[in-house]
Length: 387
Ligand code: GDP
Ligand code: MN
Image 1 (cartoon, rainbow, N blue to C red):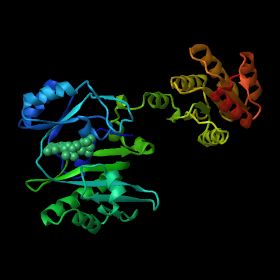
Image 2: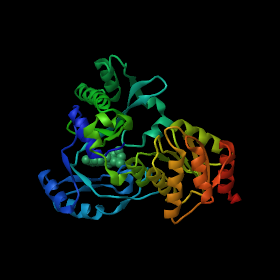
Image 3: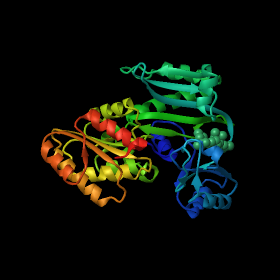
Image 4: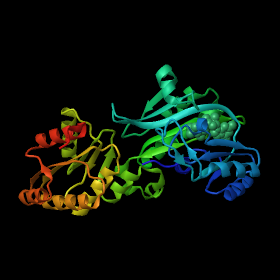
């Protein structure tokens, strides 16, 4: 799960990371009030779940509260497209209004899990403000790393050692060490999967401030992170993934053209592998889970069919707790309700298989004899083989 910059900043601030004074606002009048409180000269920042806002016009400096109000008025409700939005435009619904800071120097600090050694790694670089991928590609030696011991955590000396690589001045690197420890503590306490401060700035008057902040969280831990889950902005998420979540389905959109409806994550993976093996491309990962009701199947179909790329739909159901007849009823109902009807091929086996197959054949649906046959048919149909 992702959160907005202002939310990430509020979390990091709890762990001792200094942030500029500011407030989020959703209309120009509010922006005016906040700007006035902050002394007039402010920076207005579009709150969308994508970086690269600066270059796209989503970050603007205002000289006075009236200027802030006017600029925010243009920004709110408009669309922003950055290199991270994948060609899509996102509507700006909120802006963060912050005191503008005089930047001496832009640094970079982040934390992620290093899967190669199953440890949290904190990274720092003197090349802040720019895209870190560029730094990693062209001058990887400018990125410094410290790995936290899972039992001991990040030791104070590690935070200091990293801080000293980022700045020579003692008064500054001491502040940097506080930030690094805060990033580590916030990451662990809130079950984050990413913390990134880019840029972490040193101001002209010698203060360290997180001018930007990004945090992503581990979805599997949200049940024990009420504050974090309360920060979800449904408007920013993929509407299909949102609908799937609400229906208790686990869905991940992919870029192929064969819609897959499967029960069980393992079978879903195997199905996707087999689709690929026979030359097709899955449009999604979709696990309808155990004990599937007809409603779940209906939702699954609706989600798949709202994806314009889907040319054929493959059902692969292994009935256990899931009853084949339930799935079949859901499919029949779905096909009756949905306007768009792509070719569907089904493989059903297990609990109440015969009943399920009878229901499907009664409405003229194709039922594959084996998983392999069903997958081959779905691939051929997507490729234009038709029925
Ligand atoms: P991003 O482009 O989405 O990553 O947004 P950032 O919050 O990182 O802002 C982009 C750039 O705007 C930063 O690297 C800074 O150079 C600049 N910027 C952001 N806030 C301030 C500020 O308060 N004062 C000044 N002078 N520049 C700022
Ligand atoms: Mn940034």
